Image (tube, rainbow, N blue to C red; front, side):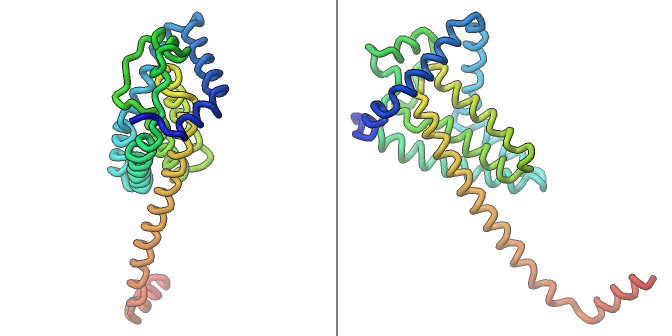
Length: 223
């Protein structure tokens, strides 16, 4: 299946941004610390593979009462992201990977970094960015906003790692971040609605308090 008109539009509209960010990533590879970056970013990108890491974190959260809402929100957000990005948008838009054009600069960069081919041939939006931002948006919304915003740091690093190893355009990452964030918000709203519904269903029990219960409570206060 060939690329769509929308994929062609992406290539033209964001060519400047994509080239600039990819060139910056490649300059890190060529810098004095290039050896460190060549280890760091391929390592970081592993955390976004298949969303397995985020699923594991969500399952651990579910084991603790205080973390159940966060864990449930993460899992729903990741599911939404999978459905929207991997099953719908990627195949529908069909944007080839940056290294697909063997005569292009992106291919040269990709060869220099020495990373292998990706399992999926299409790149927009980034599945890694979608999963990262979906999960971390769930953490941000369910947590204490004073600190939970820090959850976006690993999401950003994982997103940039995909550009560094030249398997995604910068616009792929931006697209994935937008989709992931929206999936995280949708999951948060769904879980919040569910928890409120569950809490409301427990309130009617208070209507069955008897006079004896009230007298017993008053006697305890007098004592």
